[in-house]
Image 1 (cartoon, rainbow, N blue to C red):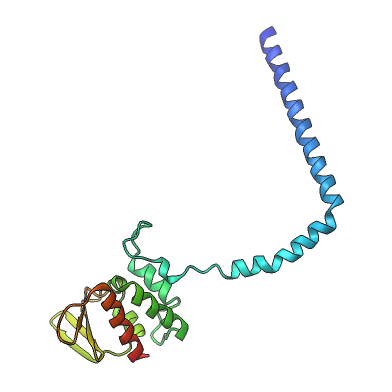
Image 2: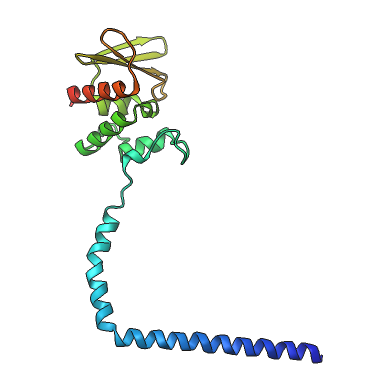
Length: 189
């Protein structure tokens, strides 16, 4: 019994000392706040507009979604909802700002086109200059003076294949593909 009573006394002393320290610290803080209340309230009032601007600008940029990046793969639904929020209705037409952002995004990230549906590609590039149906495949073709881009769709899935080439049928590099997509965006706007 003697042993447990001694341990209990040590615990009570520690608890009493810790409580006194927390109480003393709180009282010092409280005195400081009361003494500087006007300065603190002026500082808070000055920072409110900055905080509102910071919260209002908390929109994830479209270019943050890089397919296959180290942050993990992006799903087709996630990319579609980020590019065209609120899409889904039969008469839905995205605002010009969303279309412009989506165009900029696919110009810089052409491989993301494989995550987009016919509807999304129609929003971005407009009506194709040529459309062909073969069994369960559909091909949409967009042309400019210097290049051609074909989108291949199978069933109701997103684009399965995108073929960009120069008019002379030579394949394009990544930079040329971005330039070609940019030209198509310029002609369909």
